[in-house]
Length: 496
Image (tube, rainbow, N blue to C red; front, side):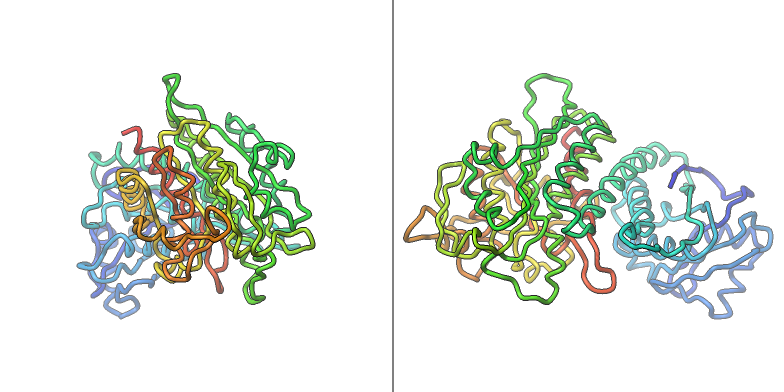
């Protein structure tokens, strides 16, 4: 899908479809008013018949509108004008995309960036337009023997602007969003693949391919190399699986000055999580293929960073394994020694993500990082706390935490910071080792973050728990690609 910008009046330029907004109460937005004038009141007459009230999630497709050069005019309900915020804007883009997908339109002109969204400029609205359209166009049917025959896909989008003053801002935002969208699509593809395809070795192959295509440096460590590093916690999780683990490292070296300290991203890569000996219940266990979405988001972000050619050093680290039961699987009560030298009593083998991450966080020290952010589908407690809207955020550095929260607000891939107070550390006590891998049920997402913080004391660190935001269940089941937009925005902003 290609994007371009047109400034000024809608004019008489031909298009397969022009999309304009209508607020609740049949109130025409400014671009809709212009289209109405061109059509000599046709839109007003159609709306007077009651076919569209302007409520959210409604559309009306008109053909051969008099005196309008476009073949079609799509009216998109925006809801109440006073309540038209970021979510409503993104919803309108999604509705427009879904309606356009049902037509034979190969190109379209969208008149949404000039819509008023309080506190948001053309950059935000242009970025969300691109991300909303590409998200709606995404399909994952590569595993089907006979994929459904789609209608002619949209090939080009014209972003209509009313004023030239917003052109530069919109152009930059669109270029950023196109790169983010490709990273999001990669993350979704990897997350949606079944676990019998997307194994640790497959993730390593994808990382190597990504590096080759985009000029990244890739290193893949096998089980012997991981053992040599002393990653006892990581290897404990891998013991029950016949699929050998991999430690994947990708490097984007974009900084213009030598000796620049990189930002390190660490992604949990459990390609399937049965829970191990602490076996999960059967319902919805198929969704545990999404337990590597943290890893997928790191690979997607590295792709976006490379496409944007960010003048920043970024390192992506992915510890990848399955968590399976078996005769050699780690058992509740086993004690392992981490790469840091700290010992961990494994009280629950289904709290395995933190065991991978703790060794990867220690491994990150060798890069003398400016900051480290780990991304993991870590705890069900986070889903209970924040649902499926916001990603949970913890940080040992307040300024880093604020950077990530701000990046989430700017990209509308939002995160909410929770406390990481020392008071919660009291829940992590073991009679037999330095630390257990779980605390009490109370504050489970917080104590999981507290566990990780024990291994991240030598640099500014943040933890993103994406258990509630990495995928959707139900009829729309599938990976979301979050938080690629947040991470890419965070990294790009570090240059500002």
